[in-house]
Image (tube, rainbow, N blue to C red; front, side):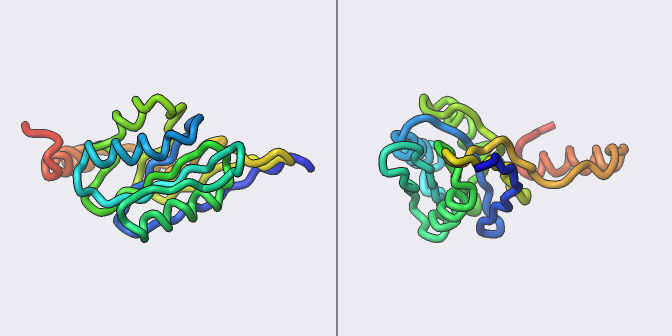
Length: 164
């Protein structure tokens, strides 16, 4: 079998965010679930992890069945071993958990943390599939001007990320 490279569109519930990453061990599922429970108590989430050895199952966790289904659909769509898909429900944002997820012992890399449309760039061989990277959102349409800059700063203040 030749190596095929394809872009796989990921989809999840509107208004939710996704973190896509790669890790090396099945313990990832429990550790990320614990990170969610202790970082943003009560946040709704779904998690799926593609096991790359043994029974090669999609392992799941979460407290929202719809978000678990979303994460599982992303995992199955790529079929990429040792990748995880963490879908965060409304009110939970990657900025709230990303440092803790990146610090997780099993996590090797984060491909994206976004609410934008995502395409996963997947290589498929006779052995299996691997995630090469992602296309996160759209390409730039120009360079921000003074009004765009003021809007960006205002948005950050409205979100509570900047105070002055």
